[in-house]
Amino acid sequence: MNYIITANTDVGISKPTNQDSLTVKIINTKQGKMVFAVLCDGMGGLEKGEVASASVIRAFDDWVRNRLPILCNSTIEDPIIRAEWDEIVVSQNDKIKSYGARQGIKLGTTAVAILITQKRYYIMNVGDSRAYEIKDNVTQLTHDQTFVAREVELGRMTEEQAKTDSRRSVLLQCVGASDKVYPEMFFGTPKKDATYMLCSDGFRHEISNDEIFEKFRPDVLYNDVEMNSNTINLINLNKHRMERDNISVVLIRTF
Image 1: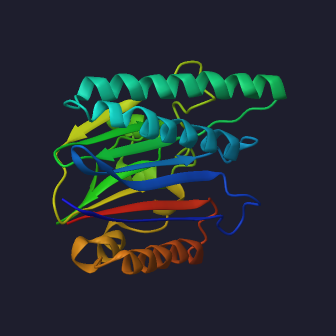
Image 2 (image 1 turned 90 degrees about the vertical axis):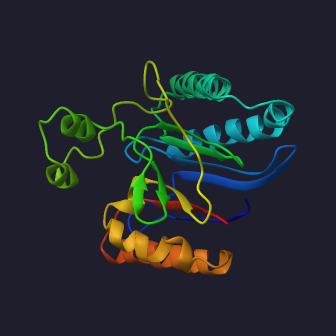
């Protein structure tokens, strides 16, 4: 299995800084080509969210550089990825909290990460940034850790009510602003000729799954130029519809 990748981030129409951070890379390993990506949405209402998001990106980059080659010497197992990614997130939560305490500020970030190997995908999520699989339809692979998502799960709110509720961005936890952080992990088999997407909440508020499918379905993503063009098109559509948050998206096309 091979990959095409692209990533874009935009400050949006209202915020003075872009507090999102992201990375995506194709990696040549002893077990074949892999793709690794992380996307973090620094907390818009808190100070220096970009510091928190960039710190988490660096920590995962260090893991890819130092630990992944070692893991590729043998079989990569779900519990190992879970334990090591948990350790990264918990360590970053403590580090960012300590930094904020020293500076007298509050800061935090969501985090969604994906590693796609030839046989398995591994996804970690904290907060409300999302991972999707797009093939015959648009499938959300992660669960939002938000107040409204919990209310929907408990049957106290409908999906439609959640989309417009004023509390839709209230997080149950995030990295750097939670006393304890509990990452969720998701595992599965990657599909050939599919698109895997990571995005911040700013990317998805003002556009529909049908619009995402139209631009990101695998058969229209021939190369990285087409992927980049379609991504920018949807970012601009979000801005035209007055999305006020930073807007970020990572695409991975398998073939």
